[in-house]
Image (cartoon, rainbow, N blue to C red):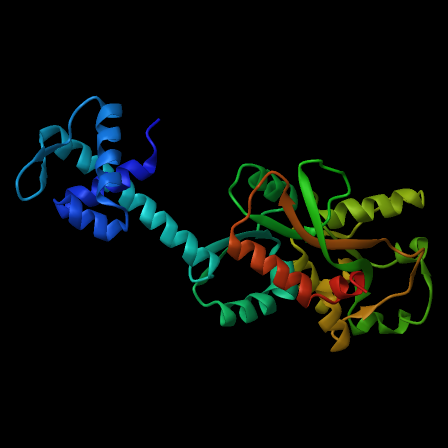
Length: 303
């Protein structure tokens, strides 16, 4: 295989049409340039230039080679330029898989701040269910996922924790009187119970929670998304099983009230899910690093 540098020297000589001028441009001695061109001609099996008193001009074979070399070097220069822009965060797209609710409750504030710092970095958000997002990650359609961590281990995935939350039972002001009263699951069954439809991490969790207590889950309503579930809870349709992270602001504003249901529900970690064999771009690395530094959970981990 012919070394790329020989083609670069050939290109400069062809443009300059003079060995001496090419020597000055490349900062290489003229005898060295002559030797490199001879080496290239030998490897190609054909002369490339016609020597004249004024310098050199391409022969017909050299003209054809020149066209290909020019295209190749132009592409390489563009690639080097774009890589430099990526590294300087002047260009790039970050493709994230994440739920609509987690985008709204967690990610948006960080995207806003990151965009202010690096306005030329674009975001492409995919909001399929986690299982579907993992398939897209493995097929290279997204760069990484931000999600609750899956319970089943997958050796292809790397998990980078950003925070910890838990599942809780909440209701609107109609159920505020229950806040200070411990409620068993059997007592809870007396009230309308709203849960998220399967397949979802939330539904898997509550199914397991009831199963461990040997109680049959009989929800009043199955709702497709956590966002919609929270909306139904706010207007008093019943008590719901939700991710605490998603309703912290509503609890603070007293739109919803956290109930004291026993036994305690599980604690769960959420964060970035990447593919171990995947090489992330500089914008992706920078954004993940920013999330880790900005997240209270990550700061606790680093103490």
